[in-house]
Length: 379
Image 1 (tube, rainbow, N blue to C red):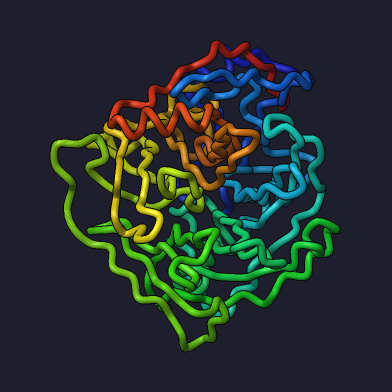
Image 2 (image 1 turned 45 degrees about the vertical axis):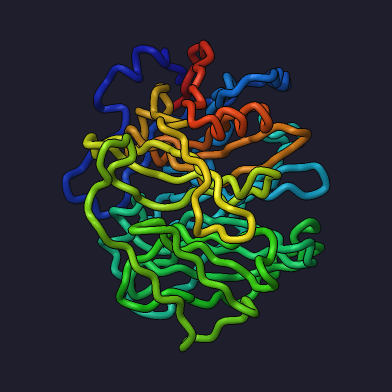
Protein backbone atom coordinates (compact mmCIF):
# COMPACT_ATOMS: atom_id res chain seq x y z
CA UNK A 1 0.00 0.00 0.00
CA UNK A 2 1.44 3.39 -0.96
CA UNK A 3 0.93 6.27 1.42
CA UNK A 4 1.70 9.94 1.05
CA UNK A 5 5.15 10.75 2.48
CA UNK A 6 4.18 14.19 3.70
CA UNK A 7 1.28 12.85 5.70
CA UNK A 8 3.27 9.96 7.09
CA UNK A 9 6.28 11.98 8.12
CA UNK A 10 4.19 14.32 10.24
CA UNK A 11 2.99 11.45 12.37
CA UNK A 12 4.90 10.76 15.57
CA UNK A 13 4.17 7.07 15.15
CA UNK A 14 6.21 6.74 11.95
CA UNK A 15 8.09 4.00 13.75
CA UNK A 16 6.43 1.80 16.32
CA UNK A 17 7.85 2.59 19.73
CA UNK A 18 7.87 0.13 22.62
CA UNK A 19 9.12 1.08 26.08
CA UNK A 20 10.92 -2.19 26.70
CA UNK A 21 11.13 -3.96 23.35
CA UNK A 22 12.30 -7.52 23.18
CA UNK A 23 13.46 -6.86 19.64
CA UNK A 24 14.77 -3.72 17.95
CA UNK A 25 12.15 -1.43 16.50
CA UNK A 26 11.50 -2.43 12.90
CA UNK A 27 10.58 0.28 10.44
CA UNK A 28 7.15 -0.24 8.94
CA UNK A 29 8.13 1.78 5.93
CA UNK A 30 11.22 2.75 3.99
CA UNK A 31 11.95 5.65 1.70
CA UNK A 32 11.99 4.37 -1.85
CA UNK A 33 14.93 5.57 -3.89
CA UNK A 34 14.35 7.47 -7.08
CA UNK A 35 14.51 5.54 -10.32
CA UNK A 36 16.47 8.30 -12.06
CA UNK A 37 20.08 7.61 -12.97
CA UNK A 38 20.95 11.31 -13.24
CA UNK A 39 24.20 12.19 -11.51
CA UNK A 40 24.11 15.44 -9.53
CA UNK A 41 26.08 18.19 -11.21
CA UNK A 42 29.23 19.02 -9.27
CA UNK A 43 30.07 22.71 -9.34
CA UNK A 44 32.85 24.78 -7.80
CA UNK A 45 31.24 25.60 -4.49
CA UNK A 46 32.75 25.53 -1.03
CA UNK A 47 29.74 23.70 0.36
CA UNK A 48 28.57 20.24 1.21
CA UNK A 49 25.44 19.58 -0.81
CA UNK A 50 23.05 16.85 0.19
CA UNK A 51 22.04 14.79 -2.82
CA UNK A 52 18.45 15.13 -3.99
CA UNK A 53 18.53 11.35 -4.40
CA UNK A 54 18.90 10.76 -0.67
CA UNK A 55 18.50 8.38 0.98
CA UNK A 56 20.50 6.16 -1.35
CA UNK A 57 20.15 3.04 0.84
CA UNK A 58 17.02 2.18 2.84
CA UNK A 59 15.75 -0.92 4.66
CA UNK A 60 14.36 -3.70 2.48
CA UNK A 61 11.43 -5.43 4.10
CA UNK A 62 11.82 -8.55 1.94
CA UNK A 63 15.15 -9.34 3.65
CA UNK A 64 14.70 -10.13 7.33
CA UNK A 65 18.32 -9.26 8.20
CA UNK A 66 18.00 -5.65 6.91
CA UNK A 67 14.29 -5.00 7.36
CA UNK A 68 14.71 -2.53 10.22
CA UNK A 69 17.68 -0.22 9.73
CA UNK A 70 20.40 0.36 7.12
CA UNK A 71 22.97 3.03 8.03
CA UNK A 72 26.59 4.07 8.83
CA UNK A 73 28.42 2.71 5.78
CA UNK A 74 32.12 2.09 5.42
CA UNK A 75 33.24 2.98 1.89
CA UNK A 76 36.22 2.32 -0.37
CA UNK A 77 37.05 3.52 -3.89
CA UNK A 78 38.32 0.64 -6.04
CA UNK A 79 38.41 0.40 -9.84
CA UNK A 80 36.59 3.75 -10.10
CA UNK A 81 33.63 2.31 -8.19
CA UNK A 82 32.52 3.10 -4.67
CA UNK A 83 31.89 0.04 -2.54
CA UNK A 84 29.71 0.18 0.58
CA UNK A 85 29.64 -2.00 3.67
CA UNK A 86 26.59 -0.64 5.45
CA UNK A 87 25.29 -1.59 8.87
CA UNK A 88 21.97 -3.43 8.83
CA UNK A 89 19.66 -4.54 11.63
CA UNK A 90 16.80 -6.94 11.07
CA UNK A 91 14.13 -8.84 12.86
CA UNK A 92 16.52 -10.91 15.00
CA UNK A 93 18.18 -7.81 16.44
CA UNK A 94 21.69 -8.64 15.19
CA UNK A 95 23.79 -5.99 13.47
CA UNK A 96 25.50 -7.16 10.26
CA UNK A 97 27.16 -5.64 7.21
CA UNK A 98 25.53 -5.57 3.80
CA UNK A 99 27.21 -4.79 0.49
CA UNK A 100 26.34 -2.32 -2.26
CA UNK A 101 28.24 -0.67 -5.11
CA UNK A 102 27.90 2.56 -7.10
CA UNK A 103 29.58 3.76 -10.28
CA UNK A 104 28.84 7.45 -9.87
CA UNK A 105 28.69 7.63 -6.08
CA UNK A 106 25.05 8.71 -5.98
CA UNK A 107 23.05 5.83 -7.42
CA UNK A 108 23.29 2.31 -6.04
CA UNK A 109 23.82 0.05 -9.05
CA UNK A 110 23.84 -3.24 -7.19
CA UNK A 111 23.07 -4.44 -3.69
CA UNK A 112 23.42 -8.01 -2.42
CA UNK A 113 20.48 -9.76 -0.83
CA UNK A 114 22.58 -11.49 1.84
CA UNK A 115 24.91 -10.01 4.48
CA UNK A 116 28.62 -10.32 3.76
CA UNK A 117 29.97 -9.99 7.30
CA UNK A 118 28.85 -10.92 10.80
CA UNK A 119 30.82 -10.76 14.04
CA UNK A 120 30.71 -13.94 16.05
CA UNK A 121 30.76 -13.00 19.72
CA UNK A 122 33.52 -14.66 21.70
CA UNK A 123 32.38 -13.62 25.17
CA UNK A 124 29.19 -12.56 26.87
CA UNK A 125 28.13 -9.25 25.35
CA UNK A 126 26.88 -6.14 27.11
CA UNK A 127 23.63 -6.06 25.18
CA UNK A 128 22.34 -2.87 26.74
CA UNK A 129 25.35 -0.92 25.40
CA UNK A 130 24.81 -2.36 21.95
CA UNK A 131 21.13 -1.48 22.00
CA UNK A 132 21.84 2.10 23.00
CA UNK A 133 24.52 2.24 20.31
CA UNK A 134 22.03 1.88 17.50
CA UNK A 135 19.28 -0.58 18.25
CA UNK A 136 20.86 -4.02 18.01
CA UNK A 137 21.48 -6.69 20.61
CA UNK A 138 24.85 -7.79 19.27
CA UNK A 139 26.99 -8.18 16.19
CA UNK A 140 29.13 -5.70 14.26
CA UNK A 141 28.64 -1.96 13.98
CA UNK A 142 29.91 0.95 11.87
CA UNK A 143 32.59 -0.41 9.53
CA UNK A 144 35.51 1.70 8.34
CA UNK A 145 37.41 0.47 5.29
CA UNK A 146 40.92 1.48 4.26
CA UNK A 147 43.70 0.40 1.94
CA UNK A 148 47.17 1.33 3.21
CA UNK A 149 49.87 2.39 0.73
CA UNK A 150 48.33 0.39 -2.09
CA UNK A 151 48.76 -2.95 -0.32
CA UNK A 152 46.78 -5.89 -1.67
CA UNK A 153 44.75 -5.92 1.57
CA UNK A 154 41.72 -3.99 2.77
CA UNK A 155 41.60 -3.39 6.51
CA UNK A 156 38.32 -2.94 8.34
CA UNK A 157 37.83 -1.61 11.84
CA UNK A 158 34.40 -1.80 13.43
CA UNK A 159 32.64 -1.81 16.76
CA UNK A 160 32.04 -5.32 18.09
CA UNK A 161 29.58 -6.19 20.81
CA UNK A 162 31.97 -8.52 22.59
CA UNK A 163 32.35 -8.21 26.37
CA UNK A 164 31.62 -4.53 25.99
CA UNK A 165 31.58 -2.36 22.89
CA UNK A 166 35.09 -2.95 21.60
CA UNK A 167 37.02 -2.14 18.46
CA UNK A 168 37.66 -5.09 16.16
CA UNK A 169 40.07 -5.36 13.25
CA UNK A 170 39.84 -7.71 10.29
CA UNK A 171 41.08 -7.73 6.71
CA UNK A 172 40.47 -9.20 3.28
CA UNK A 173 42.51 -9.48 0.08
CA UNK A 174 41.58 -6.83 -2.49
CA UNK A 175 41.11 -9.46 -5.19
CA UNK A 176 38.81 -11.51 -2.96
CA UNK A 177 36.81 -8.39 -2.15
CA UNK A 178 36.36 -7.40 -5.78
CA UNK A 179 35.43 -10.95 -6.77
CA UNK A 180 33.09 -11.19 -3.78
CA UNK A 181 34.82 -14.05 -2.11
CA UNK A 182 34.15 -12.97 1.43
CA UNK A 183 37.25 -14.53 2.99
CA UNK A 184 37.60 -12.23 5.93
CA UNK A 185 40.42 -12.83 8.36
CA UNK A 186 39.36 -13.89 11.85
CA UNK A 187 38.91 -10.56 13.67
CA UNK A 188 41.09 -9.41 16.52
CA UNK A 189 39.81 -7.18 19.32
CA UNK A 190 42.29 -4.31 19.65
CA UNK A 191 40.69 -2.37 22.52
CA UNK A 192 40.64 -3.63 26.13
CA UNK A 193 37.73 -5.75 27.33
CA UNK A 194 35.05 -4.40 29.65
CA UNK A 195 35.55 -0.94 28.18
CA UNK A 196 33.48 0.96 25.64
CA UNK A 197 35.39 2.10 22.55
CA UNK A 198 34.23 3.13 19.08
CA UNK A 199 35.27 5.17 16.04
CA UNK A 200 38.87 3.99 15.62
CA UNK A 201 40.35 4.75 12.19
CA UNK A 202 43.37 3.57 10.23
CA UNK A 203 45.24 6.08 8.05
CA UNK A 204 45.55 5.20 4.36
CA UNK A 205 49.32 5.73 4.41
CA UNK A 206 52.03 4.85 6.85
CA UNK A 207 53.39 7.80 8.81
CA UNK A 208 57.13 7.76 9.48
CA UNK A 209 57.15 4.13 8.37
CA UNK A 210 54.45 2.96 10.75
CA UNK A 211 50.75 2.17 10.53
CA UNK A 212 48.74 4.86 12.28
CA UNK A 213 45.48 4.29 14.18
CA UNK A 214 43.48 7.30 15.38
CA UNK A 215 41.62 6.21 18.51
CA UNK A 216 40.50 9.36 20.37
CA UNK A 217 39.86 13.09 19.92
CA UNK A 218 39.36 13.99 23.55
CA UNK A 219 41.10 15.58 25.37
CA UNK A 220 43.36 15.67 22.30
CA UNK A 221 44.03 13.79 19.06
CA UNK A 222 45.51 10.43 20.02
CA UNK A 223 47.23 8.14 17.52
CA UNK A 224 48.88 4.78 18.01
CA UNK A 225 51.81 4.00 15.70
CA UNK A 226 52.52 0.31 15.13
CA UNK A 227 54.88 -1.72 12.98
CA UNK A 228 52.21 -4.21 12.03
CA UNK A 229 48.43 -4.57 12.08
CA UNK A 230 48.80 -8.14 13.29
CA UNK A 231 47.38 -8.03 16.82
CA UNK A 232 46.81 -10.89 19.22
CA UNK A 233 44.34 -11.28 22.08
CA UNK A 234 46.80 -9.86 24.60
CA UNK A 235 47.88 -6.85 22.58
CA UNK A 236 45.55 -3.87 23.04
CA UNK A 237 45.67 -0.17 22.41
CA UNK A 238 44.93 1.80 25.54
CA UNK A 239 42.82 4.82 24.72
CA UNK A 240 41.81 7.79 26.86
CA UNK A 241 38.58 9.69 26.42
CA UNK A 242 38.09 12.31 29.10
CA UNK A 243 37.28 15.92 29.92
CA UNK A 244 34.24 18.17 30.09
CA UNK A 245 32.67 20.31 27.40
CA UNK A 246 34.71 22.66 25.24
CA UNK A 247 33.98 26.35 25.59
CA UNK A 248 33.04 29.02 23.06
CA UNK A 249 32.43 26.63 20.18
CA UNK A 250 29.59 24.67 18.58
CA UNK A 251 31.25 21.26 19.20
CA UNK A 252 31.06 21.41 22.97
CA UNK A 253 30.75 17.65 23.32
CA UNK A 254 33.11 15.67 21.09
CA UNK A 255 31.82 12.19 20.31
CA UNK A 256 34.37 10.65 17.98
CA UNK A 257 35.93 10.42 14.54
CA UNK A 258 34.01 9.84 11.32
CA UNK A 259 35.44 8.40 8.11
CA UNK A 260 39.11 7.35 7.80
CA UNK A 261 41.18 10.50 7.19
CA UNK A 262 41.55 11.54 3.54
CA UNK A 263 45.00 12.64 2.43
CA UNK A 264 45.06 16.02 0.67
CA UNK A 265 47.85 18.45 -0.22
CA UNK A 266 46.78 20.58 2.74
CA UNK A 267 46.65 17.85 5.37
CA UNK A 268 44.59 14.88 6.49
CA UNK A 269 40.91 15.77 6.16
CA UNK A 270 39.00 14.36 9.13
CA UNK A 271 35.28 14.49 9.82
CA UNK A 272 34.06 14.04 13.36
CA UNK A 273 30.84 13.93 15.37
CA UNK A 274 29.90 16.36 18.09
CA UNK A 275 27.00 18.00 19.87
CA UNK A 276 26.27 21.40 21.30
CA UNK A 277 23.92 21.72 24.28
CA UNK A 278 21.20 19.95 22.30
CA UNK A 279 22.10 16.34 22.98
CA UNK A 280 19.35 15.09 20.69
CA UNK A 281 21.25 16.27 17.61
CA UNK A 282 24.44 14.80 16.20
CA UNK A 283 26.32 17.19 13.92
CA UNK A 284 29.46 16.76 11.84
CA UNK A 285 32.59 18.89 11.98
CA UNK A 286 35.72 18.95 9.82
CA UNK A 287 39.39 19.54 10.54
CA UNK A 288 42.74 19.31 8.76
CA UNK A 289 45.54 17.43 10.50
CA UNK A 290 49.24 17.83 9.81
CA UNK A 291 50.49 15.29 7.25
CA UNK A 292 53.60 14.30 9.21
CA UNK A 293 52.21 14.75 12.71
CA UNK A 294 48.44 14.22 12.58
CA UNK A 295 48.07 14.83 16.30
CA UNK A 296 48.43 18.50 15.32
CA UNK A 297 45.24 20.25 14.16
CA UNK A 298 45.99 22.81 11.43
CA UNK A 299 42.49 24.05 10.65
CA UNK A 300 39.06 23.44 12.06
CA UNK A 301 35.68 24.55 10.71
CA UNK A 302 34.01 27.02 13.04
CA UNK A 303 30.57 25.60 12.34
CA UNK A 304 29.16 22.14 11.53
CA UNK A 305 29.55 21.03 7.93
CA UNK A 306 26.62 18.61 8.17
CA UNK A 307 23.46 18.93 10.27
CA UNK A 308 20.22 16.91 10.50
CA UNK A 309 17.78 19.06 8.55
CA UNK A 310 16.01 16.72 6.14
CA UNK A 311 13.01 14.51 6.78
CA UNK A 312 15.00 11.28 6.32
CA UNK A 313 17.43 12.55 8.98
CA UNK A 314 14.66 13.13 11.48
CA UNK A 315 12.28 10.23 10.87
CA UNK A 316 14.15 7.09 11.81
CA UNK A 317 15.18 4.94 14.72
CA UNK A 318 17.24 7.78 16.20
CA UNK A 319 15.93 11.13 14.90
CA UNK A 320 18.35 14.00 14.58
CA UNK A 321 21.51 11.97 13.98
CA UNK A 322 23.89 12.38 11.03
CA UNK A 323 26.89 10.08 11.33
CA UNK A 324 29.73 10.12 8.80
CA UNK A 325 31.53 6.81 8.43
CA UNK A 326 32.74 6.89 4.81
CA UNK A 327 34.27 9.47 2.49
CA UNK A 328 36.15 9.32 -0.81
CA UNK A 329 37.76 11.67 -3.30
CA UNK A 330 36.64 10.93 -6.84
CA UNK A 331 37.45 13.05 -9.91
CA UNK A 332 38.43 16.02 -7.77
CA UNK A 333 35.23 15.91 -5.75
CA UNK A 334 34.57 15.06 -2.13
CA UNK A 335 31.83 12.49 -1.51
CA UNK A 336 30.76 12.05 2.10
CA UNK A 337 28.58 9.11 3.17
CA UNK A 338 26.62 9.14 6.38
CA UNK A 339 23.93 7.43 8.40
CA UNK A 340 20.62 9.29 8.64
CA UNK A 341 18.64 8.90 11.88
CA UNK A 342 20.23 5.45 12.32
CA UNK A 343 17.96 4.14 9.55
CA UNK A 344 19.17 5.27 6.12
CA UNK A 345 22.29 6.14 4.13
CA UNK A 346 22.80 9.55 2.56
CA UNK A 347 25.53 11.25 0.53
CA UNK A 348 26.73 14.87 0.54
CA UNK A 349 29.29 16.28 -1.87
CA UNK A 350 31.49 19.26 -2.71
CA UNK A 351 34.36 20.33 -4.91
CA UNK A 352 37.39 19.26 -2.87
CA UNK A 353 39.60 22.28 -3.53
CA UNK A 354 36.86 24.77 -2.75
CA UNK A 355 35.92 22.92 0.41
CA UNK A 356 39.51 22.90 1.61
CA UNK A 357 39.99 26.58 0.80
CA UNK A 358 36.95 27.41 2.87
CA UNK A 359 38.21 25.27 5.72
CA UNK A 360 41.69 26.84 5.64
CA UNK A 361 40.18 30.30 5.82
CA UNK A 362 38.40 29.14 8.99
CA UNK A 363 35.10 30.10 7.45
CA UNK A 364 32.01 28.01 7.57
CA UNK A 365 31.78 25.46 4.73
CA UNK A 366 28.07 26.18 4.58
CA UNK A 367 25.60 23.39 4.14
CA UNK A 368 23.49 24.17 1.12
CA UNK A 369 20.23 22.29 1.01
CA UNK A 370 18.68 21.26 -2.25
CA UNK A 371 14.95 21.19 -2.64
CA UNK A 372 13.93 17.58 -2.33
CA UNK A 373 10.89 16.20 -4.00
CA UNK A 374 8.67 14.25 -1.67
CA UNK A 375 9.02 10.55 -2.14
CA UNK A 376 6.46 7.87 -1.67
CA UNK A 377 7.08 5.34 1.01
CA UNK A 378 5.81 1.82 0.85
CA UNK A 379 4.52 -0.24 3.70
